[in-house]
Image (tube, rainbow, N blue to C red; front, top):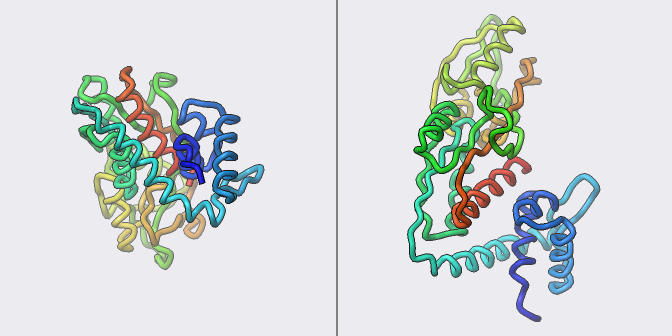
Length: 284
């Protein structure tokens, strides 16, 4: 068998992660037809069908799932080999809203390190307002936040984040008991929207846990202490959306937006790697 085409393997990994030919093409700055051609050639070379395609969905075949880890390792090794010539150690300071990053953070950091091992990453996780303030004061190279008010069309919309009432499956409400909430505090816009929706629905509530970061608030839900107001994607394992079960009002969706003024190729490539990872998680 001839050596595998690295570009084709990389295209496969991006399609698998993003579950979309269109998104993979955007991430790799190419066309959907070029992505499809690369995948077809890779499948022909391997003699295996790697993806199952339907009008609505792209998913791994059994053989594609078996190949994915090896493909990811191959692409990562290639990126590290190229990065070994990067003598200058580049520092990249990124701010991310604590509402949209949770237990998946290790996977995000691993992806960025595989892309550019010599990149020094400084990541600050805080509320969207705090992140935007730091960005505007030029303390950050890039900011990934929930869309701030009055800043339409000034950043790149990456995906739409949906929020839910997260709790453990066997959590039960008791007659006359106010709904116990775990939130990220009064400065959180999602918390404000949630309690406003509860008040409008006439549902009594009480805040029993406040934490900074989706992982911390999610831990309170996983422990059965409260119902957490969280992005669905950041909900911890073993928890579910309790909205329908408890007859709770729906929560608004918000756009996740990237702000950056970086122009050098190395930094833009690193940011694109982070964005691609986030889009993949939001599509999962």
